[in-house]
Image (cartoon, rainbow, N blue to C red; front, top):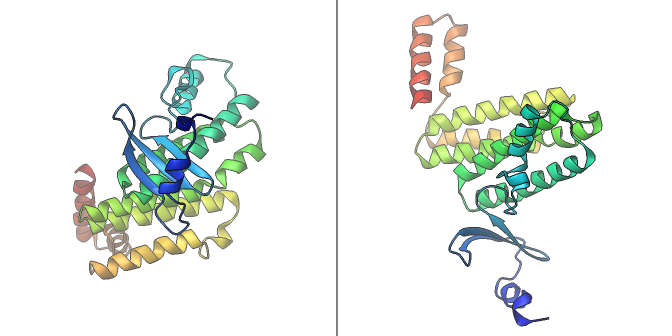
Length: 244
């Protein structure tokens, strides 16, 4: 094998560390940014935009975008076995990049990739060829929501907006609970590790920033206590924040 066809030098100078970051953002030969992940048996390289593998399915940036076009333009559209396999490939690729963005603390990018995965999950649920295939994806929905919630909350903390971070966590927990209920797993929601991690994150933020309750929680309490003037003020404050 020619010397420029193996990875010996790269692997030797970047040993695998199971407890380390294992992710870096580097320049490609043409100057573009690429993500490299050091895994146990080698290195993964991912593009930072479009599909992580750089492939453009049928000329589209992602398979999801092509699928959405086909859904509109093809009256006989349905998911066949080959397309289902390609969908699963896109799920895995976006998972790797989402984890990479989280490790690099590029929380905005992690949110974007999580949104893509959730949209692809929605598409699959609507067009699934069978219940088993639907379950294969839906059982991971709460995990993707967890990643998105974590990233969005940390982004808000970076922006010194603890209130938004708390609202984000509350919304994420609500979405996760809905997913658990749809799967019939509601009894295990409170004991779920990811749920507990978000709850712990919320407690930590409340303690660090001396916040007792989020705006949404204060609004719900004001309505329950029939403090309508206070509720209106809180509702206006939430609307201003969402608009900004």
